[in-house]
Length: 126
Image 1 (cartoon, rainbow, N blue to C red):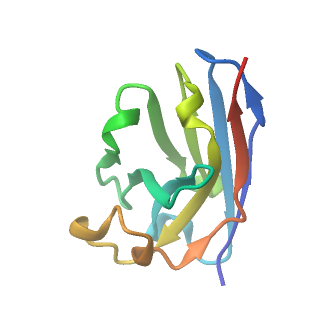
Image 2 (image 1 turned 30 degrees about the vertical axis):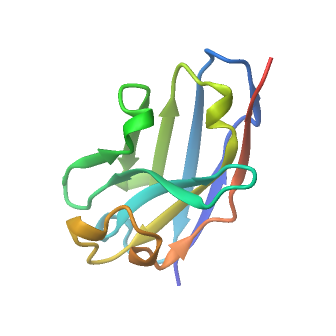
């Protein structure tokens, strides 16, 4: 069983920055592809970013490219999402996720990930 726990500051002003962290426990973290999703109020959960295992590539939804950076520290079983230049449209509950054998064509889909965190609320507001 893999358990994921997110953490991060909850409220930030527009234009500000925020770092979310996700700590995993259970099986070997480095064997998993890890990702971040978010659910904005009244909307479906959507893909934000992913980082493949074993030094694979990083992937971002278009609206966060150049502003968000995903990274991982396998020795600490941690995946981080650094978010810069935040806008109110980034307000959402953010979830980290992990999955094994995630193929590239499905990397943005929820079904590719078997393990999920409980989510952490991020609010961007002045």
